[in-house]
Image (tube, rainbow, N blue to C red; front, top):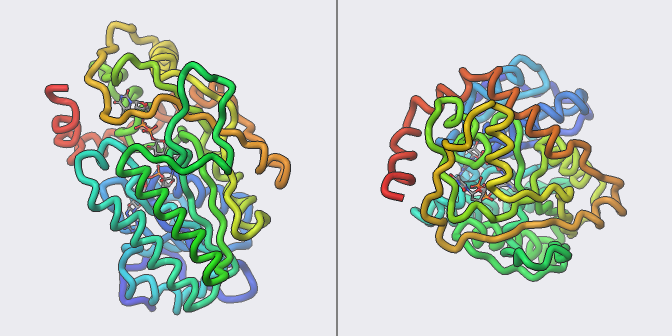
Length: 355
Ligand code: NAD
Ligand code: TDX
């Protein structure tokens, strides 16, 4: 056994695909684990997660009951832990979700973003080279392309859009992408990258726009909208993102980047008003606060490549997905109230007081 804490069923052996999901105790990674267990019950799924503030074992409670799943606590930037995991688990596919993911935190403290998002990716790929894998899949973001102007709605990010980052977060993700492509070209490592637009859905940490607004509106607290609220994001229901990653890591061409998004563009103020309508709360809760430094105006993905090569299209429209999401937060209060009761209060005070 690994000399690190393991929870869940041991490996069964056999000819099944072993998939290591890093960052699987976070928002998208956990949704991806549930997606794999549902759609590929024959595969073995191993989650490697350091359980930072954003990681939550409660999210994986149901997965822990599945014999095909196993959780290992560890840091992707820790070479010893990663190599021990490779020796024992012999993964076929690595999907790297592990990251510091919040733009506002990267503005306050960039260092940890560079360590996890860049160095962690390197450590994982070095292990892939040493032990051999069939695919290393990097979960990236549309933020690597920078932003688009509000007055040219005909413009979209394609895979050929130049990298042009704004925040320490996006710079760290773009650096990792370049490193992944370098490992493909120089060492022939079989890699793929997906660059996705803003996700939303169950298990989204309440520091991000949608869950923050839902949780605060339910408590009749003010809703802090940055600037004028006119920035645009291209919203993707998390399950649609999971189906895209699953396709690309199995069938996508090695060495390629695939954009993932689905023409669901809304301004932030439209999103907040939609949430208020769903919750039957008054618009007077909205408070405009000082803008985020370097705030990207508009993200919008052109998903033509993943559609034409792999047949992927998102199945959930924003107006349906936001209803499902609000419903999930209403039905799973224990999940997010637990988070709000921890260090989160200090976080909110630090980030929003005097704003
Ligand atoms: P998240 O912050 O909810 O979860 C991140 C997870 O990674 C947590 O479980 C955390 O414990 C773990 N982690 C952090 N540092 C680690 C380390 N050093 N070693 C091991 N585990 C570590 O993030 P998310 O929103 O689920 O995003 C997942 C990935 O998708 C990230 O790479 C992010 O850049 C990318 N992405 C996110 C979005 C979005 O809208 N949320 C959109 C596009 C791309
Ligand atoms: O309190 C807030 N008020 C507000 O107006 C917060 C938290 C956000 N916003 C705005 C900023 C953005 O324009 O809402 C928009 C969405 O903000 P976030 O939820 O922080 O997401 P964003 O910065 O767009 O980045 C997200 O999408 C791309 C993820 O956090 C990244 O991990 C992903 O790469």
